[in-house]
Length: 602
Image (cartoon, rainbow, N blue to C red; front, side, top):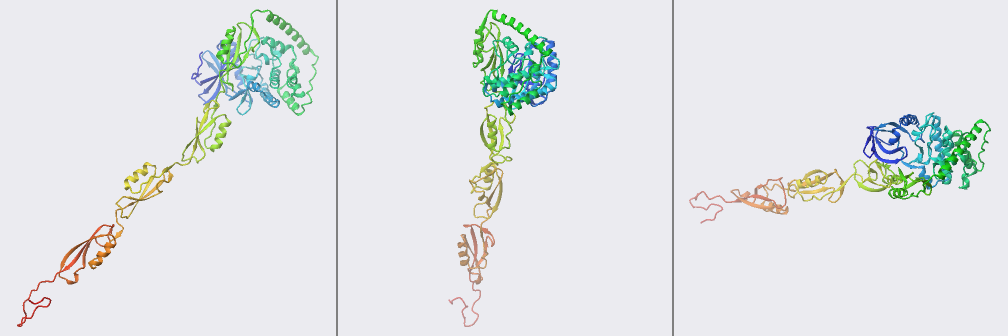
């Protein structure tokens, strides 16, 4: 079965990238195409998928885990088969593992709070008949809100079922309870022990028992008493010492009998740090005697195992490859004749760097055995939050808190007020690497445009230029001495900024002059000429003969007529009477031959 980004599992889950790889399964970030959400998809390795009994238990226990809906438990959504393997669809937790926090160092208060939330998850599971059996820092996640989330309940023990065959050991040796190391029955107290180991490690920076290999560690879990945390970290109070040591009791009956009981003990230790919790002495009954006998038998078996490990040939020192790049680490381990298995997880450590190894560097291991290295996939991805509608400063602060860099692009908007965010690129909900740059698109308000200068242009040209600039044109005519259609005024004025789509008013010449011509008919020519010249008009005189002496020098007609609008320089034609005396039509009317009046005698 080949898995790679882009493949759709079971017609529903589209693989995006691998989050990690463990001994049992690969974990991928995937997109649930039916529900439109991101999930963590755990797919069994093929060697387990071929084990019919294992698969049946895996499926049954995944169904039980799917019923665990709690704020401190990673939810199991779905299970199914794909090609020759099987998968579990789980809630995708964006954040880091407890392992990373332990490596960075925790305060005592932080360690207690983490433990309290782990106990809340365990208590809920125990109430539903589920024991985790493999609690360890890698199975405890911290989400972006700082909440503890316990995962991998899907491979836990549900009721009476066992994920492995009778007598086999499941779990990580450093966090394994004594009863698990002996192949005995497990119960809620088993998880209490593992939580006690994790609390010990958070307080001191190391586990209570470590060794060269899993068998050596298991022997210590069964046969050695753990040191008090305060012997390593003097800041640990006597009361908290007592809580840890009670959780790490060899006999399950001597541990806290429930997660709620351990939670109460933690709270009491916080309230009275100098008053250690009183541990009840072991009861001398049959169960105690059976425990002692079982421990002796285990020690005998362990002694035989130790003799084997001391005498077997070809033991070599495991190179320390933590902090190296994966390729270099693999070559170094293979050169020392070890097989290499790789687990990849999201981490704040740079991509490709080895975070941890098992066995640890410097330990003795059989030549040809496997060394597992855990390699960082980098910090994973973070979803871009919703910023649309927020003030720009608030949006930038939100993105910085999420680990993003920001740049700002300003853009006009008809609907988003100035100073608020229109949107982002990448958009809301997009998964990107932490530290990525998000472009914020901020509104400058409604878009403004510089009003062009259209004064002196003809009306058609001016209207075209204004519309091209994004304005609506309101054109009004006005009588003017300027040429017809010439733009006389504009509002807003040229060079001002106005909202795109707003109105610009222009006033253009109607072509009709501003001088109203008076009616000069009946006026003397000299008067009319003087008035017209004063008005800036040109005058043409046309003489018309008249035999009426009263019309001599009088304006008889004009063109244009009175009331017409003219412009300076326009011509007015005046028709003026020119008197001519009529001819003498009669002779002498008396004998004496007297002369005609008005005409001199010959």
